Image 1 (cartoon, rainbow, N blue to C red):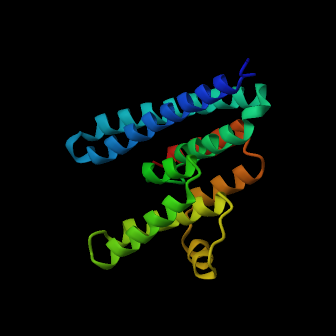
Image 2: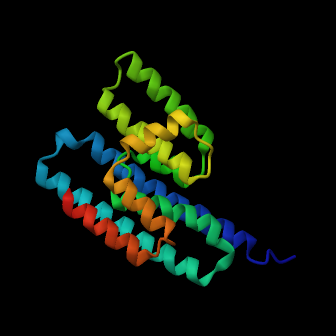
Length: 188
């Protein structure tokens, strides 16, 4: 019996997820090795990775426009890529959880983050940034946030996150998102 494209769709989603995972791992590795690289190497490698994310985003846009059965699944991947490109998110692990639509793991990461900040294992600045990213990802995934979480997000979200949210709420066309991303990359 024919799979009617289900097998191919599954394979495509798996390959796209693998490609996104590879790019996010590349960003993670780059951030972890930042101190070992000279500034030019770091900037060049980061720029190349961002360029690969842009190309991946363009490919996803083409797939989405040509195959409506994958729109919902690919849409979440595209949002994650747009977030990475636009610099709304700085933590590749959070981008991955967001792309995979894993709110439970995001909540667990938030609890670990708050614990690590309390015991001094993590600086308050990093903890704040990652907490903002996690709450923003949960909000974009349609999860209910407590009033305290909404208040925290409202008072601490960055300009790049507000721009990402504005563009993605307007339909998030690739051109608008890439334009917003380009403006954020110029600030780096």
